[in-house]
Length: 41
Image (tube, rainbow, N blue to C red; front, side):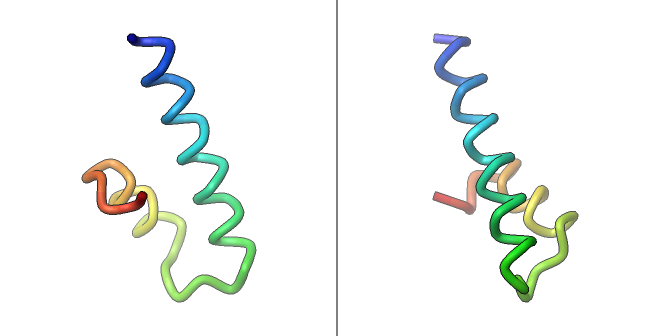
């Protein structure tokens, strides 16, 4: 179960990196916050 969570967290981190690279309207910090609150799918 925890492995799955870690994997999911890694995926989110990766997605955030991609999103910040593609001229995202959000800052990395905002995306990180959204991810932590589960607002990013």
